[in-house]
Image 1 (cartoon, rainbow, N blue to C red):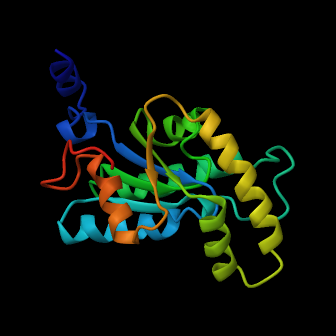
Image 2 (tube, rainbow, N blue to C red):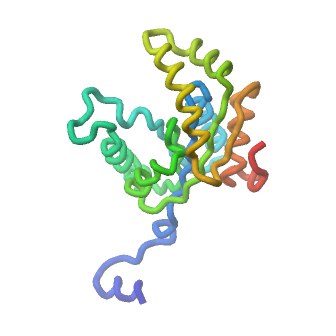
Image 3 (tube, rainbow, N blue to C red):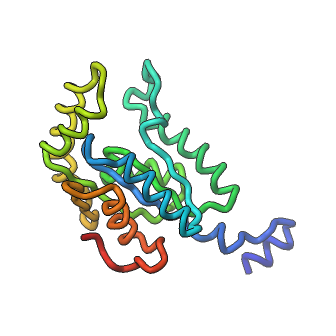
Amino acid sequence: MDALRQAQSGQEAPSRRERTPPEVLLIGGRSGAGKSSVGWEVAARLRAADVGHALVEGDVLDTVHPAPPDDPDRSRLTTRNLAALWANYAALGCRRLVYTNTAAVLGSEEWIFTEALGSPRLTRVLLTATDETAARRLTAREQGSELARQLRRSASMARHLETHVPVGTHRVPTDGRTVGEVALAVLRVTGWLPGAAGEGAP
């Protein structure tokens, strides 16, 4: 009946693709856990399998100074920028999003994706790393004045994430593993990669 009413009003019925909610893989974790590297590797493996997707680094959506006076934590800016990007990807038929950001896996961040993407299906993956592993990676990566701040923030966020991620969040350890091994473990929980569905995250 909905399709009939739309036809009578001159509107096209929504396609099945449009009715299907987008799927979002949220990859979070402390600084030094390997989120960006794993995100790119996940995208590379999906591309190799010809699985449609988009990749967004959450950090680039709010990198502006000073923060908007009415949006001090830049969350509204993040939401607007993500909505604009997703509108372009969705127009191309994209229904899967890989999103990397430290706090993206927290339940308090869910409203950003609901507002920007509608009612997406979220899969949360928390990458974990010991203090020693995170410090080694950050020391190799950070060459400027940010290292000390990143080390402090990484340790603090590790504790916060471990305590506050929602039930059902998949934890994937990264210590002593290659980027490829971690990416495959992440993909196993999504069911997006042919042959890896339902295997769980080791």
